[in-house]
Image (cartoon, rainbow, N blue to C red; front, side):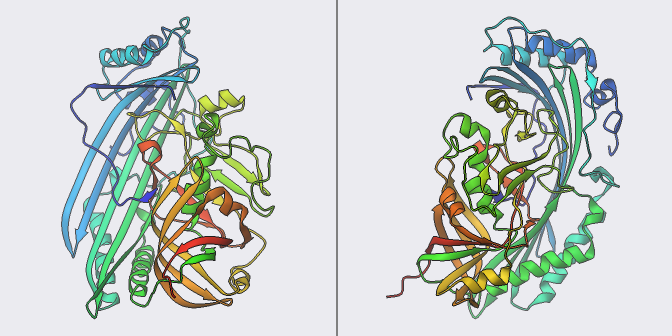
Length: 510
C-alpha cells in the first residue's frame, strides 16, 4: 500500500471489449435520493429493458450470481512545481463490467462502449465458462437507495473550477517557502474526482452511489550545509472543496516542513531486537498490511492465510479489538455500498483478542454461509471484485502514550512515519521503512531517528503487543491499497502501541 499523489484515472479509450476468466455535469437525473431504475440508468445512456436483456444473456448458460457494474469517473489533477503549474489535466473514464459467477468460478468481461450490442457481446464472453442450466433473469429492476450516505457534499466537484483550486496550491507554496530558508524545492499535487456507479444484479436490484475524492500532497526538499533531505505530507478524503480550508492547508504544510527539517538532526538507532512503539494514526499501515490482508476471506477460503483455521481463537491480547468500518463519514476508505451492491458496515474482526470474522465479498460469504460484510471492492469496471479492507483500525487500549514510553527499559524506538514496505500476505512476514521516528532510552525520548527498517511477522507482532494507548485515530493521508494489482482507496489507524520485540535494522555499533 502506498500514499499515491495523483488519481489513477484515464481518458476514455477507443470503444472495445476486454475479458478475463478466473478461478479465483454536477447533478444528473437519476443519481440522487429516490431515483427510479430508469432515472439511475439514464446517466449512463441505457434503459431498463437493455439491462434486463444483457443480464439474461449473461446468465443464459447458468449462474449462481451475475451483475453489471456501470462506472463513470471524472477526474482532475494539478501539479505545482516551484510556483509554476507543470501539469493540469481532466479526464473521463466510463464503462461497464459484466460478471457471471458459478461456484468459485468467475467469468468477467468489460466494455467502454455502452451500446446494447457491445454489452451483449461482453455478456456472452463472461458467460462462456458456464455449464449449468440457464438462470432466470429479473423481469424488472427495483432501484434501492443505499442505507446511508457517508459522504454527501454541499457542492460536487464538477461545480468547482481550476480558478478556485489553484489559489490553494499557491497558498501552500508560499507557506512552505516562508517556513524556513532551507526549503529549496516545493511540489504541490492536487487531485479530485467525482465517481458514479450503478450496480444491476441478477436478483433484480439496482443500486447507485456517487463517490467524491480529494487529495492534496505537499513534497519538500531542503538543504543545509551541503546535505539534502526530502519529506512530505498529504491529506485526503471523500470530501468537497470547502474542506480544504486555510487552516487545513497550513497544517499539512507545517507537517511536511517539520518532517523534512527534523531529518537533519536525526540519526540511525542501534540495530537488533528492540521494543518498538508504533505511533498513533499512520502506523496503521502495519495493521493493514501485516495483519489486515490475512483477514480477507479469499485468502482464508483458499487456506493461504495463517488465520484460515483461527476463527474463534485468541490471536492477540485481550485488550486488542480490531474493526474494519466502511461507515466512517467522509473517510477515504468509506463506502455507502460496496462494488457488488451490498450495504457497507462496521465489521468486528478481532474482539478482545479473539478472531471473530473475516472480510467477505459475496463469493466468500456463500462459501462460509454468512452474509457479506460489504467488502467486495474493485479498482474499476475493468476488474473483478474481491474482499478488500475499507477503514481498518485498532481501537483504544487501557494505557496512555506516556505510560507506554516510560515502560521501555534500555533502548527502544518510536516509529512515526512510514514510506515503503513489503509483506508476504499468507504468512504475514513484513519489512517496513521508517522515515521519521524517535529513540527511547530508559523510558525517555532522547533523539530523532531516520532511515530505519523494521522486520517481523504480523501474527507474531500482534501477539507481542504488550500495551495499547487510549489515543486511536485514523490517518488522513491518501493511502491506496494494491492487492492483486488493483488500486483502491483505504484508511487505517492505530492507537500508540508497544510491541515488545521487533528486529530493527539500524547501525551496528561494535
